[in-house]
Amino acid sequence: MKQTNDELPVIQRTYDLVCWYVPILNRPPRDHRFNLGDRIIANLYELLEGLIAARYGRDKLGALERLNFKLELLRYQTRLLADFGLLPADRREYAARGLNEVGAQIGAWIASLRRRQGQPLEPLAKPCRWERLAAAFAQPPAGFEPAGGLDHRSGHRFRLEPRRLG
Image 1 (tube, one colour):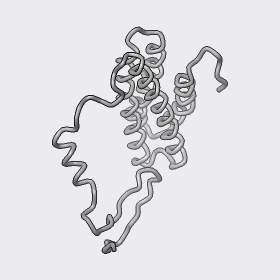
Image 2 (spheres, one colour):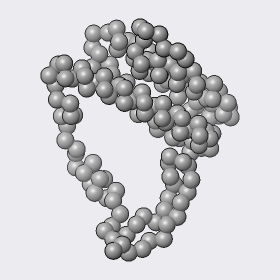
Image 3 (cartoon, helix red, strand yellow):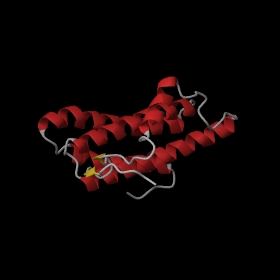
């Protein structure tokens, strides 16, 4: 869709994503269409509405931070749709790329607002204990490669034999 001069690029990209994604979400089987499909559609519309409200509202920073949560929810819902086999890999990749572009633009908007207000660009909260533990155990033991699993980007399973490194 061609961008007009008065629209922000993030709003236009979200609009294009909604126009592309909604017809695809109306195709899955009935049980998934009325559960997951409707939730994704509602979140896409709320994302677009929230971006328009943030553009014209007073509390832009708060609105954009809430939209970041909505965007993350859409990423997981898209991943679920693909994991259920209802979204082909090429379409999932396009949806993920579109959501990432919107996320990058929202992040840049948040950073510019924080700079104007003199706020730090980094989140103030430190990782809690369980986040540090999860990060520590996310790495394979020293000297071993992972045994395999599911590549969430392509949806393909892979298998690697454990072997000693070095």
